[in-house]
Length: 285
Ligand code: SAM
Image (cartoon, rainbow, N blue to C red; front, side, top):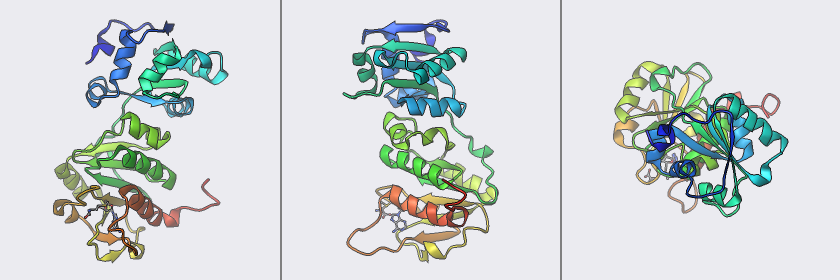
Protein backbone atom coordinates (compact mmCIF):
# COMPACT_ATOMS: atom_id res chain seq x y z
CA UNK A 1 0.00 0.00 0.00
CA UNK A 2 1.38 3.45 -0.72
CA UNK A 3 0.58 6.65 1.11
CA UNK A 4 -2.36 7.38 -1.14
CA UNK A 5 -4.38 4.73 0.68
CA UNK A 6 -2.87 4.92 4.12
CA UNK A 7 -3.83 8.46 4.85
CA UNK A 8 -6.98 7.76 6.87
CA UNK A 9 -10.52 7.79 5.54
CA UNK A 10 -10.97 9.58 2.24
CA UNK A 11 -12.95 12.78 2.31
CA UNK A 12 -16.00 11.38 0.63
CA UNK A 13 -18.28 13.75 -1.15
CA UNK A 14 -16.09 16.79 -1.18
CA UNK A 15 -14.48 18.88 -3.87
CA UNK A 16 -11.07 19.78 -2.57
CA UNK A 17 -9.14 22.71 -4.03
CA UNK A 18 -5.44 22.07 -4.48
CA UNK A 19 -2.93 24.65 -5.66
CA UNK A 20 0.37 23.30 -4.34
CA UNK A 21 2.59 20.78 -6.09
CA UNK A 22 3.74 19.72 -2.63
CA UNK A 23 0.27 18.53 -1.66
CA UNK A 24 0.64 14.90 -0.54
CA UNK A 25 -2.39 13.70 -2.55
CA UNK A 26 -0.89 15.23 -5.69
CA UNK A 27 2.46 13.64 -4.90
CA UNK A 28 0.77 10.24 -4.63
CA UNK A 29 -1.04 10.76 -7.93
CA UNK A 30 2.22 11.79 -9.62
CA UNK A 31 3.86 8.65 -8.26
CA UNK A 32 1.43 6.65 -10.44
CA UNK A 33 3.69 7.38 -13.39
CA UNK A 34 5.90 4.67 -11.80
CA UNK A 35 5.01 1.03 -12.29
CA UNK A 36 5.77 0.14 -8.67
CA UNK A 37 3.29 2.70 -7.33
CA UNK A 38 0.64 1.56 -9.80
CA UNK A 39 1.09 -2.04 -8.74
CA UNK A 40 1.12 -1.28 -5.03
CA UNK A 41 -1.96 0.92 -5.18
CA UNK A 42 -3.77 -1.05 -7.90
CA UNK A 43 -4.60 2.22 -9.64
CA UNK A 44 -3.61 4.13 -12.76
CA UNK A 45 -4.07 7.49 -14.49
CA UNK A 46 -6.35 8.12 -17.47
CA UNK A 47 -6.15 11.55 -19.08
CA UNK A 48 -8.94 13.47 -20.71
CA UNK A 49 -12.67 13.90 -20.26
CA UNK A 50 -13.53 11.40 -23.01
CA UNK A 51 -11.58 8.61 -21.36
CA UNK A 52 -13.04 9.39 -17.95
CA UNK A 53 -16.58 9.30 -19.37
CA UNK A 54 -15.90 6.03 -21.25
CA UNK A 55 -14.42 4.40 -18.15
CA UNK A 56 -17.26 5.41 -15.85
CA UNK A 57 -19.86 4.34 -18.41
CA UNK A 58 -18.16 0.94 -18.69
CA UNK A 59 -18.31 0.49 -14.92
CA UNK A 60 -14.68 1.09 -13.96
CA UNK A 61 -14.16 2.34 -10.41
CA UNK A 62 -12.89 5.89 -10.17
CA UNK A 63 -10.93 6.76 -7.03
CA UNK A 64 -10.11 10.38 -7.82
CA UNK A 65 -11.22 12.91 -10.42
CA UNK A 66 -8.89 15.85 -10.98
CA UNK A 67 -9.97 18.81 -13.07
CA UNK A 68 -8.41 22.15 -13.93
CA UNK A 69 -10.15 25.31 -12.79
CA UNK A 70 -10.80 26.17 -16.45
CA UNK A 71 -13.03 23.09 -16.74
CA UNK A 72 -15.14 24.05 -13.74
CA UNK A 73 -18.84 24.43 -14.49
CA UNK A 74 -18.72 22.45 -17.75
CA UNK A 75 -21.74 20.20 -17.70
CA UNK A 76 -19.96 16.91 -18.48
CA UNK A 77 -17.21 17.64 -15.97
CA UNK A 78 -19.81 18.39 -13.31
CA UNK A 79 -21.61 15.13 -14.17
CA UNK A 80 -18.40 13.12 -13.81
CA UNK A 81 -17.61 14.90 -10.54
CA UNK A 82 -21.07 13.98 -9.23
CA UNK A 83 -20.59 10.34 -10.26
CA UNK A 84 -17.18 10.25 -8.60
CA UNK A 85 -18.60 11.60 -5.36
CA UNK A 86 -21.59 9.23 -5.56
CA UNK A 87 -19.25 6.25 -5.79
CA UNK A 88 -17.19 7.40 -2.79
CA UNK A 89 -14.34 8.98 -4.76
CA UNK A 90 -12.50 12.20 -4.26
CA UNK A 91 -12.77 15.26 -6.52
CA UNK A 92 -9.88 17.70 -6.79
CA UNK A 93 -10.03 21.13 -8.40
CA UNK A 94 -6.50 22.18 -9.31
CA UNK A 95 -4.63 24.89 -11.19
CA UNK A 96 -2.96 24.31 -14.56
CA UNK A 97 0.49 23.96 -12.98
CA UNK A 98 -0.69 21.04 -10.87
CA UNK A 99 -2.47 19.22 -13.70
CA UNK A 100 0.58 19.69 -15.99
CA UNK A 101 2.78 18.15 -13.33
CA UNK A 102 0.54 15.07 -13.07
CA UNK A 103 0.58 14.32 -16.78
CA UNK A 104 4.02 15.83 -17.45
CA UNK A 105 2.66 17.77 -20.37
CA UNK A 106 2.79 21.45 -21.28
CA UNK A 107 -0.68 21.38 -22.78
CA UNK A 108 -2.36 19.02 -20.38
CA UNK A 109 -5.83 17.59 -20.56
CA UNK A 110 -8.23 19.51 -18.34
CA UNK A 111 -9.48 16.33 -16.66
CA UNK A 112 -7.64 13.34 -15.23
CA UNK A 113 -9.12 10.26 -13.57
CA UNK A 114 -7.46 7.78 -11.21
CA UNK A 115 -9.03 4.35 -11.73
CA UNK A 116 -8.66 0.92 -10.17
CA UNK A 117 -6.72 -1.42 -12.48
CA UNK A 118 -8.38 -4.62 -13.67
CA UNK A 119 -6.87 -7.89 -14.80
CA UNK A 120 -8.84 -10.80 -16.24
CA UNK A 121 -7.70 -14.07 -14.60
CA UNK A 122 -6.41 -16.47 -17.24
CA UNK A 123 -8.46 -19.32 -15.76
CA UNK A 124 -11.62 -17.28 -16.41
CA UNK A 125 -10.90 -17.01 -20.13
CA UNK A 126 -12.96 -19.64 -21.93
CA UNK A 127 -13.07 -18.57 -25.55
CA UNK A 128 -16.23 -19.37 -27.48
CA UNK A 129 -17.03 -19.69 -31.17
CA UNK A 130 -16.29 -16.50 -33.10
CA UNK A 131 -13.88 -15.17 -30.49
CA UNK A 132 -10.37 -13.98 -31.26
CA UNK A 133 -7.77 -13.35 -28.56
CA UNK A 134 -4.33 -11.83 -28.96
CA UNK A 135 -1.40 -13.26 -26.98
CA UNK A 136 1.70 -11.07 -26.87
CA UNK A 137 5.05 -12.58 -25.99
CA UNK A 138 7.13 -10.16 -23.84
CA UNK A 139 5.83 -7.01 -25.56
CA UNK A 140 8.22 -4.18 -24.65
CA UNK A 141 6.99 -1.00 -26.25
CA UNK A 142 4.11 0.86 -24.52
CA UNK A 143 3.08 2.47 -27.81
CA UNK A 144 2.87 -0.92 -29.50
CA UNK A 145 0.81 -2.37 -26.66
CA UNK A 146 -1.58 0.59 -26.62
CA UNK A 147 -2.00 0.47 -30.38
CA UNK A 148 -2.67 -3.28 -30.24
CA UNK A 149 -5.31 -2.86 -27.52
CA UNK A 150 -7.00 -0.15 -29.60
CA UNK A 151 -6.83 -2.27 -32.75
CA UNK A 152 -8.13 -5.37 -30.94
CA UNK A 153 -11.09 -3.30 -29.78
CA UNK A 154 -11.77 -2.03 -33.31
CA UNK A 155 -11.54 -5.53 -34.80
CA UNK A 156 -13.93 -6.95 -32.21
CA UNK A 157 -11.34 -9.17 -30.51
CA UNK A 158 -12.23 -10.47 -27.07
CA UNK A 159 -9.05 -9.56 -25.20
CA UNK A 160 -5.30 -9.61 -24.77
CA UNK A 161 -3.11 -12.11 -22.95
CA UNK A 162 0.30 -10.75 -21.95
CA UNK A 163 2.83 -13.57 -21.81
CA UNK A 164 6.06 -13.26 -19.79
CA UNK A 165 7.64 -9.98 -18.65
CA UNK A 166 5.85 -7.24 -20.55
CA UNK A 167 5.36 -3.51 -20.50
CA UNK A 168 2.52 -2.34 -18.23
CA UNK A 169 -0.87 -1.86 -19.95
CA UNK A 170 -1.73 0.73 -17.28
CA UNK A 171 1.24 3.02 -17.89
CA UNK A 172 0.44 6.60 -18.92
CA UNK A 173 1.91 6.02 -22.38
CA UNK A 174 0.03 2.78 -23.06
CA UNK A 175 -3.28 4.15 -21.80
CA UNK A 176 -2.78 7.22 -24.03
CA UNK A 177 -2.12 5.02 -27.06
CA UNK A 178 -5.25 2.92 -26.44
CA UNK A 179 -7.41 6.05 -26.88
CA UNK A 180 -9.86 4.63 -24.34
CA UNK A 181 -9.88 1.01 -25.53
CA UNK A 182 -8.07 -0.01 -22.31
CA UNK A 183 -11.52 0.25 -20.71
CA UNK A 184 -13.20 -1.97 -23.32
CA UNK A 185 -10.69 -4.78 -23.84
CA UNK A 186 -9.95 -7.29 -21.06
CA UNK A 187 -6.27 -7.83 -20.37
CA UNK A 188 -4.81 -10.94 -18.76
CA UNK A 189 -1.23 -11.89 -17.88
CA UNK A 190 0.57 -15.21 -17.61
CA UNK A 191 3.98 -16.80 -17.62
CA UNK A 192 4.86 -18.80 -20.73
CA UNK A 193 4.26 -22.01 -18.74
CA UNK A 194 0.84 -20.84 -17.51
CA UNK A 195 -0.13 -19.85 -21.05
CA UNK A 196 0.92 -23.26 -22.42
CA UNK A 197 -1.05 -25.09 -19.68
CA UNK A 198 -4.11 -22.90 -20.37
CA UNK A 199 -3.87 -23.51 -24.12
CA UNK A 200 -3.99 -27.28 -23.61
CA UNK A 201 -7.50 -27.16 -22.17
CA UNK A 202 -8.96 -24.01 -23.73
CA UNK A 203 -10.15 -25.55 -27.00
CA UNK A 204 -8.50 -22.83 -29.08
CA UNK A 205 -6.52 -22.78 -32.28
CA UNK A 206 -3.17 -21.04 -31.77
CA UNK A 207 -2.09 -19.15 -34.86
CA UNK A 208 1.47 -18.06 -34.13
CA UNK A 209 3.16 -15.51 -36.36
CA UNK A 210 6.78 -16.06 -37.23
CA UNK A 211 9.18 -14.77 -39.84
CA UNK A 212 10.05 -18.42 -40.57
CA UNK A 213 6.38 -19.44 -40.76
CA UNK A 214 5.55 -21.65 -43.73
CA UNK A 215 1.82 -20.94 -43.86
CA UNK A 216 0.49 -17.90 -45.72
CA UNK A 217 -1.74 -16.17 -43.13
CA UNK A 218 -4.49 -15.78 -45.77
CA UNK A 219 -4.88 -19.54 -46.26
CA UNK A 220 -5.77 -20.38 -42.63
CA UNK A 221 -9.31 -21.34 -41.62
CA UNK A 222 -10.10 -18.98 -38.77
CA UNK A 223 -13.65 -20.29 -38.32
CA UNK A 224 -13.00 -23.78 -37.01
CA UNK A 225 -12.33 -22.89 -33.38
CA UNK A 226 -11.84 -19.75 -31.30
CA UNK A 227 -8.48 -18.29 -32.37
CA UNK A 228 -5.54 -17.03 -30.34
CA UNK A 229 -3.13 -14.97 -32.43
CA UNK A 230 0.27 -15.39 -30.84
CA UNK A 231 2.71 -12.57 -31.60
CA UNK A 232 6.45 -12.45 -30.91
CA UNK A 233 8.63 -9.98 -29.06
CA UNK A 234 9.73 -6.87 -30.99
CA UNK A 235 13.43 -7.72 -30.96
CA UNK A 236 13.72 -11.49 -30.81
CA UNK A 237 10.42 -12.78 -32.18
CA UNK A 238 8.72 -15.89 -30.73
CA UNK A 239 10.87 -18.30 -28.73
CA UNK A 240 10.74 -21.99 -29.75
CA UNK A 241 8.96 -22.88 -26.50
CA UNK A 242 5.95 -20.83 -27.64
CA UNK A 243 6.25 -21.43 -31.40
CA UNK A 244 5.93 -25.18 -30.68
CA UNK A 245 2.42 -24.57 -29.31
CA UNK A 246 1.16 -23.32 -32.66
CA UNK A 247 -1.53 -25.08 -34.64
CA UNK A 248 -0.28 -22.98 -37.56
CA UNK A 249 2.92 -20.98 -37.92
CA UNK A 250 1.79 -18.11 -40.09
CA UNK A 251 3.72 -15.58 -42.13
CA UNK A 252 2.59 -12.38 -43.78
CA UNK A 253 4.31 -12.29 -47.18
CA UNK A 254 6.45 -9.20 -47.67
CA UNK A 255 8.30 -7.42 -50.46
CA UNK A 256 10.90 -4.67 -50.30
CA UNK A 257 13.85 -4.25 -47.96
CA UNK A 258 12.14 -4.39 -44.55
CA UNK A 259 13.02 -7.51 -42.56
CA UNK A 260 9.72 -7.58 -40.72
CA UNK A 261 6.62 -5.57 -39.92
CA UNK A 262 6.26 -3.57 -36.73
CA UNK A 263 4.57 -5.74 -34.08
CA UNK A 264 1.43 -3.59 -33.85
CA UNK A 265 1.10 -3.48 -37.64
CA UNK A 266 1.54 -7.27 -37.93
CA UNK A 267 -1.07 -7.77 -35.20
CA UNK A 268 -3.50 -5.49 -37.04
CA UNK A 269 -3.03 -7.35 -40.32
CA UNK A 270 -3.63 -10.68 -38.55
CA UNK A 271 -6.65 -9.47 -36.59
CA UNK A 272 -8.49 -8.13 -39.60
CA UNK A 273 -7.78 -11.31 -41.57
CA UNK A 274 -8.79 -13.63 -38.72
CA UNK A 275 -12.03 -11.70 -38.26
CA UNK A 276 -12.69 -10.88 -41.91
CA UNK A 277 -15.75 -13.16 -41.99
CA UNK A 278 -17.18 -11.44 -38.91
CA UNK A 279 -16.68 -7.82 -39.92
CA UNK A 280 -18.98 -5.93 -42.23
CA UNK A 281 -19.77 -2.32 -43.02
CA UNK A 282 -23.46 -2.88 -42.51
CA UNK A 283 -23.30 -4.51 -39.07
CA UNK A 284 -20.39 -2.62 -37.56
CA UNK A 285 -19.54 1.05 -37.41
N1 SAM B 1 13.70 -9.87 -35.36
C1 SAM B 1 12.41 -10.38 -35.01
C2 SAM B 1 12.28 -11.83 -35.49
O1 SAM B 1 13.25 -12.36 -35.98
O2 SAM B 1 11.22 -12.42 -35.36
C3 SAM B 1 11.37 -9.47 -35.58
C4 SAM B 1 10.18 -9.42 -34.73
S1 SAM B 1 8.85 -8.51 -35.43
C5 SAM B 1 9.35 -6.86 -35.32
C6 SAM B 1 7.69 -8.69 -34.14
C7 SAM B 1 6.64 -9.72 -34.36
O3 SAM B 1 5.73 -9.28 -35.37
C8 SAM B 1 7.13 -11.06 -34.84
O4 SAM B 1 7.60 -11.88 -33.79
C9 SAM B 1 5.85 -11.62 -35.44
O5 SAM B 1 5.00 -12.08 -34.44
C10 SAM B 1 5.26 -10.40 -36.10
N2 SAM B 1 5.64 -10.21 -37.50
C11 SAM B 1 6.24 -9.14 -38.06
N3 SAM B 1 6.35 -9.31 -39.39
C12 SAM B 1 5.80 -10.51 -39.69
C13 SAM B 1 5.58 -11.24 -40.90
N4 SAM B 1 5.95 -10.77 -42.09
N5 SAM B 1 4.97 -12.43 -40.81
C14 SAM B 1 4.56 -12.93 -39.61
N6 SAM B 1 4.74 -12.28 -38.46
C15 SAM B 1 5.34 -11.08 -38.49
